[in-house]
Length: 181
Image 1 (cartoon, rainbow, N blue to C red):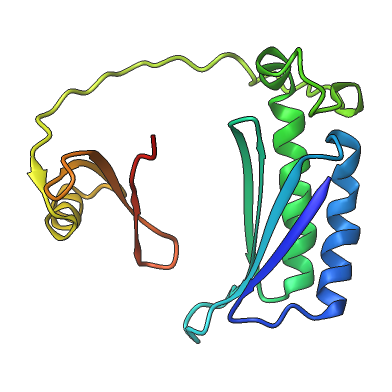
Image 2: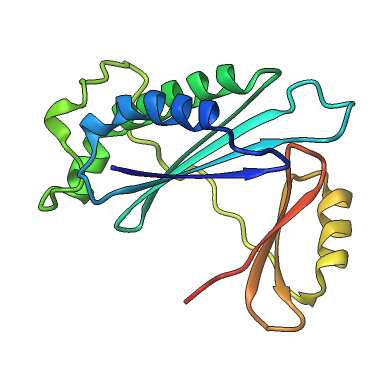
C-alpha cells in the first residue's frame, strides 16, 4: 500500500510523516501493494473550533471509496482515531466488499476479522421522495436548503444543467458535489 500525505495550513514534518506511515501501516495487511491511500492533515485557523487538528484518509479500490475523518486537539490523537475508524469500516463491511471485489486481489479478505455485530442486517430503502428539480444557482440552492432545514439539497445547476448537491460541512461552510462522467 502506498501512502500519499499532504498538508493544509500545516507543514508535514518528518515526525508527522513517520507517525502517519507507522499508524497507517497497520492497515497494509488488508490491501495490495498497488493500492494508494491519501492522507490529508489540516489545522483549522478558527480559534472558536476546539478540535482543529484534522486528518482525512481516503482509499479508492476500483471505484469503492473508503474514507475516514477525525478531528481532535492533537494531530497524533487524530491519526490514531482515523486508523481505528478505517479498520472498523473495513471489518464492518467485509461481506459487502467481498461480494463486490471477489475476483480481485486488491483486498486481502483473509486478514480482515469477522464482524459479529447483530445489528448488521441489510439496510433497505424504506422511503422514496420525489420532487421537482428546477434550475438554480448554488446560492439559491443554499437558501432552499436552509429554508427546508436540511443539511443537503439536490438541484439542477442553471449553468451546466446537471444535477448537483449542495451540503453543509462540519466547519459551517458549504460543499458542492458535481457529477464527473
